[in-house]
Image (cartoon, rainbow, N blue to C red; front, side):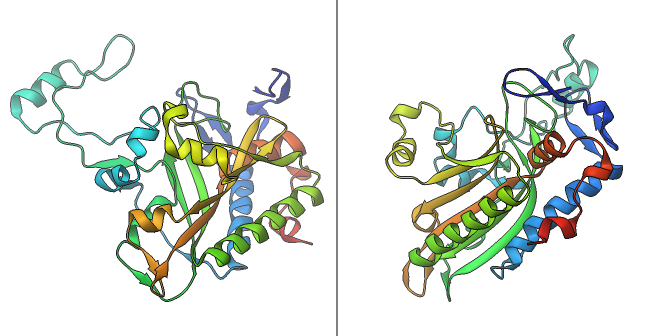
Amino acid sequence: MASDSDGDTIFNLNEVDGLQVTQDKQAVLGGAVLGLAQDIDRLFAHWAQQFGAEERQFSPLVSAAQLNKLEYFKSFPHQVMFPVSLLPDDDNLNAFADDPISSDDALRLTETSPVHQCLAPAACFPVYMSMSGQDLPGTCFVTLRSTCFRKEESLTPLERQTAFTMREVVCVGAQGDVQEYLEQFKQIVVGFFERLSLPVVLERATDPFFNAPTNRKYIMQKVAPLKHEMVYDGHLAIGSINFHQSSFGETFDISCQGSEVFSGCVAFGIERWLFAFLGHFGTDTDSWPGFEDLVAG
């Protein structure tokens, strides 16, 4: 079952054509629901094309050293996840192979090799990292779809997963260009929600920082409206609009035509959008909008 913030049933996951749920509460998409997810992502890509965004594909692994430059480990140690491997010593490997699983189905890891990469917590980070040290010829737009990973305290299929799919549309360049882009995208998504009567509103938000009151980035978000979330049915953030100011440019030494660079992104959680669509349109596939319906108007 999927429930709203008061625990009332919205729809039955077992009634969704092509949707399966694994034992660890991850959603497996196939059949009609996979088609709906693809149409939703095509909608995001369609919006990205309106800004001439270049499609890119990155690895789901990001450099730990680069993330550290962003103070990510200071801000989100409770969410970061790592790809680990065992130290390739025969005794170490044999100790693991002899008794790999505990009584609660957790791995009994023996000594691990040094970890130099992290599982990507957001789709956009590799974009800024790939621009490190560059002087851009002008404001640029990039879009990408990636599998992202965050440690969650509790798991709910589609709504809150450790592995999820994110589409982002990123703008890097002059301050005025970035702010205009974010405002235009805000108008696009608000108009879309109104046209489909989706109960989604934009709300000012802050990220879930660790030790938030003492974190300067949290304080910055509280002082200035840097982040707005697309909140479905009063409780579930399905996307966000983010103004990073010059933070990524400064961190990765990016400039634009010799001047200070600014950045912003619009992020969409595809599984959460699926949840919103299923909650709003129901589990009957005949009631689901197709791609042409989504982009109409």
